[in-house]
Image: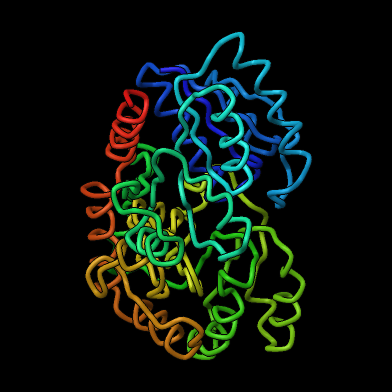
Length: 358
């Protein structure tokens, strides 16, 4: 099939990682894949994998932006020369773009819902879900049905998956004598990710374990608020703010405990990546996260916005090395069985085939 993947940009983040992974896997399975976006740091990865990138001026958050029309005309010229079999949109503005393209070209489109949407007037008047909408978790599926009245038969529940071959479990993960002190998080620096509660929790953890460290990977608008928070708590010498990373599999090897204290989360791709490396994971029990973590089996779940509970869970894993090893290895097994990329891509292929046939 000739497939067009649409996303707003390809800067580091969950949606960009999903788009790149999907494009790469579909290409390996013999499909002709093109990605259209406003560009970003991950363009190089597309080029290395011989995946075509089409630049469109779509970097906007407004579904009324003239950039959507400009992008549509760019893509119409390309689609007339070499028609696509399917269009797959990843963000709200590219759903609107896909809706316009589909209405003119009659090329069917689908979309993936990566999280939770506001119930605004634009979404109600022009929903743009496509012939099928892929929900990445049960929580997102319920959100679509309850808040936007999307029919259940229009929704395909397909969990995200990771390329398990790209992630390894280091031998140190099974070392009962190793100190477990390095805490890490990989996420954009946004209030919804709950970094502030992790920093507050680390104040208590560092009071108990003076050699504990926190590594925060990511970029975003609240960075300096978080830096000032650490300074006020007098733990800034134990916290390290680092930029977003391309190859998370390498960074994960330096982390002993992975934490995701989100207030809301559609799924949590970085949780899967940590589990794939055999790292014990602690996360908020919100959104789609409970689908990834069975409490005390494949990780630990804590209530959101509760630094004391988060600190207690972190110290529990630091103190109990057998628990850390068990959670890490069970997490890896869960990813292998339920959340591998091959399973995800095959299910998405089935959606494409059904939609294209109709």
